Image (cartoon, rainbow, N blue to C red):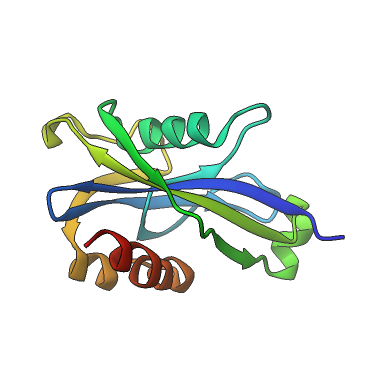
Length: 153
């Protein structure tokens, strides 16, 4: 039986631009924090026990962007799924991750944004083309092209 880690993520849009966060910390083989080469991604993270997906995504975007003024536009039907490598499986106890994705509109002033989480060192809006050039994970880039852009632009 596969052990699945449930996570949430947000595609945050303001006008024709999308918010990405620059992640500089990840998990080490023991599940603790470690520095990583910086990579751009959408705000994402694991769910905590007892959280609903909406509670989890709002917590994640608040932690990773510092923003409070979001409106949930929709929850996408399709998730971002991937399998962990063997070393990660052994260290965190999960075989795969399923990330439930949401589309959020940012209603605030961009000057209010700034990460509250030490995993993130930058928050920035990009055009759709720039998002595709900056996203580090193939699964996320494919998802953005196939699911997001085809359904909202």
